[in-house]
Length: 247
Image (cartoon, helix red, strand yellow):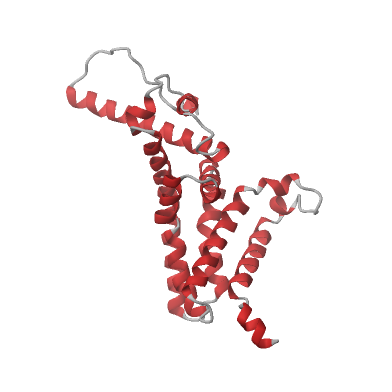
C-alpha cells in the first residue's frame, strides 16, 4: 500500500499558475483520501472497527501526517462512512446488473427460486473474486453483520442490505405460502450466510478433516452451485405449519 500512495509533504515547490496548482493539490488530496480508505478497509476487515487505531490506519496508508484522518474525514465515524461508500461503489453496479437479469428472466416467465438465489449471490461472489480490495470488502461486510457498530450496521442495512429487500419482494410471488416478513428474515439469513461463507473461504483450504481442501481450488463452480441448491432449498422448503398439516 505504501508504495502506491503519495506521502504528504511540507516542502514548498516552485509556485505554478494558480489553476494548475489547485488541480494538482486536489489530485494529491484525492489520492491520499483513497489510500486512507483502502488501508482502513483492509484493517477493518481483518481486525474489526474497534480493533484498529487511527494511527495504524494512517501508517498503513503510507502517510506521515498523524492527523490525516481528521483532515480528510473529520473523525473515525466519517472514515467508516467513507469506507462503506467505497464498498457500495464497487457492489452497487453489480447488484443493479443482477436485478436487471432477474427482471429480464421474470419477464420471460418461468422464473424459479433457485435462479433468483443464484443471480442475487453473483454480485458478492464476483466482487470477492475480482481483487484483493473486493475480498476485503466482503470480509468487512461480514464483520458488520456480527461485530456491533451502530453506524456501520445502520449503513449496512440502509444501503448495502437494501438489495436483499428487492430480492425478497421478487421471491414472494414464487413462495406465496410464506409471508413477506418470514421471507425478509430468511433473506437476511441468506445474505449473512453468503457473506460469512465467502469471508471464511480460506478455511476450506486449511481444513482436511472433511476432505474439502481441494473443493475451493479445483471445483469452485460446483461449490457455488451447491451453495445455490442449499439456499434455494431453505427458502422454498415447507413451513412448520405445512409439516404439521402433512403429518
